[in-house]
Length: 236
Image (cartoon, rainbow, N blue to C red):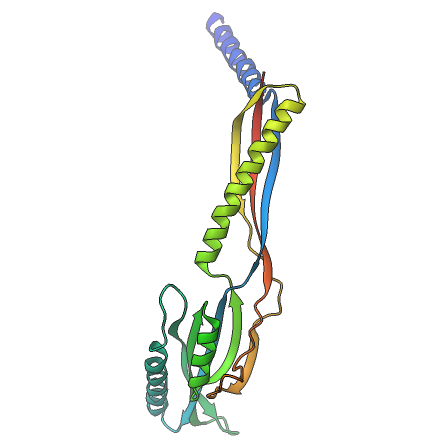
């Protein structure tokens, strides 16, 4: 009985200690958030081009598509620029049967895509105009990784500075001399560009002079935010 009482008293003591310690860590704690934001213009353009081929034999269609995309890639690679200014890559590649009214295979049709993307929009425009053997099927805009990382870094510094400034002001307003950091988290939000969706086209790219624009250049805008959330312990 005595041993049981000792164990029970020890357990109650631990419970009281844990409750008291938890209350102590929350004493003089203040939680709040600080945010830094910036409106950004999409700096990256992506153009999808497509070539279609058809024939009676699937392997012939596949060979024709490969030859067409290889030729386009060879020409496009001459315009490639480093550091994400202009890059090219192959996209989707498919061959599928066509059916007659009786449900039998009457031939084969296929498509192959080439994707041009980068931040040098005038150069992309010129390249697309030279790829006259392909159709433009889509144009989209986005935020390049270098720009996002640079802006996030700057906004993080701003948000942390605002968090510290607010903490100092809160300590002063509550009659304390200083503060210490509690638990703090830093997060960023997607820019959330709300421009129109990627434009779809069914047009023939062609060589154009300087007075003509092969593609519309209408990048959208969005707001990138970095938020610092957490708590500080006010110090006397």
